[in-house]
Amino acid sequence: MKRIAIFASGSGSNAENIYKHFSTSKGGQISLILSENPNSFVLERAKTMKIPFRVFSMSELQDGKVKEVLEAYAIDFIVLAGFLKRIPHYLIDNYPNRIVNIHPALLPKFGGKGMYGMNVHQAVLDAGDTETGITIHWVNNNYDEGDIIFQARCQVSPHDTVESIAEKVHALEYEHFPRVIDSLL
Ligand code: GRF
Image (cartoon, rainbow, N blue to C red; front, side, top):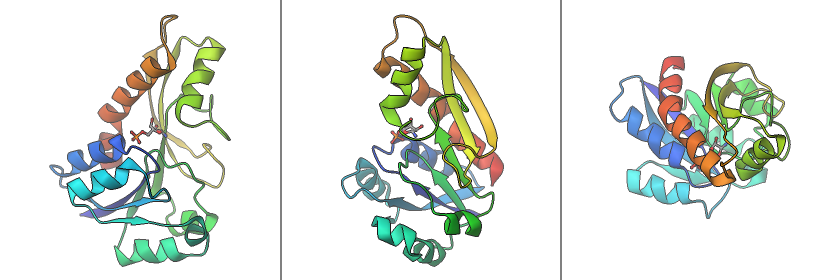
C-alpha cells in the first residue's frame, strides 16, 4: 500500500475528501499532512481524522528538513491540495513523477504567479469565459506548468459569482481528485 503525504495551506476540504476515499480504497493511505500555515484548518481536520501532521517553516522546506520528515514517514507519493508555496527543486528531484497538484481552473489558462484561491475564479469572471474547471497535473520546477494528467469542466454563466464558481470547482475536485490519485499510485 502506497503511503501518501498531503500538503495543504488552508481549509483542507480536499485533504479530508481524499482521506475518506482512501479509508475504503486498498491502493494507498494518507500517512501524513503537512502545512506551512500553523493556523490552517487542515490541521484541525488532521486531528479529527487522526492523521499525523507537521507544520514546517519556509526555511525547513528549503533546507531539507521536510525531506527528512517525508522519509521518516516512508512517503511514496505527494499530493498538493491547496498548497500555496513553491515546492523546492530538491524535493521534486527526490519524487520524480510522484508529486501531483490540483489547480482550480483549466490550465494553461489562469495559472502562474498570483493565481490561487479566489483570484483564479475572479480572473475567469473578468475574462468573461463561459467555462472553467479543474486541472490535475504533475509538479515540475515551474508553477502550474507540469504535464496535465486530467481536466474536468463546468459552465460559467453571467449569473455566477466568485463564490458560486468556487462551489462548482470544489464539486469537481471532490468528484475526481481522489479517483485520479488512486489511478496514479
Ligand atoms: C482548491 O480549490 C484547490 O484547487 C486550490 O485551493 C483550494 C483548496 O481548497 N488550489 P481546500 O483547502 O481543499 O478546501
